[in-house]
Image (cartoon, rainbow, N blue to C red):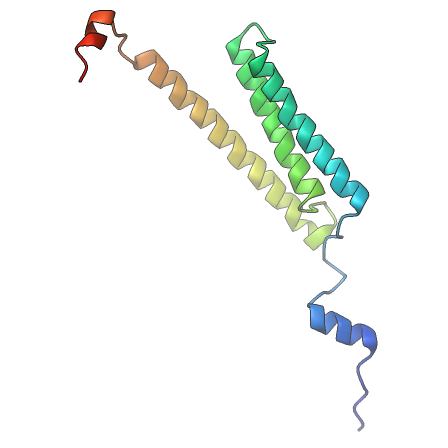
Length: 133
């Protein structure tokens, strides 16, 4: 039996540790720029909503900021982390779903805590403020 010399492609894959079967494709310049532009837009919109006091309700503003934040997370996962249904046998889409569940829990829990802190804080009169250390 004679050993066959490895081909150039085998040596390249062994050197870089790549197997092209289950790996997410690297993005092109166009996809990175698309992700960057979307990220900038999704950052500017909530800033504008808050600074210009666009919406009448503070609750509506908070909801809009949270929704746009969740969309921005998805944009980052797709355009910068290259997650899709084909890479890693679908496990990256499971990570995306898990991330969205965690984000919803964190955002709703934060709002719940802030609401209850606001509702249960003792109001202070100006006289009480003067007596504070």
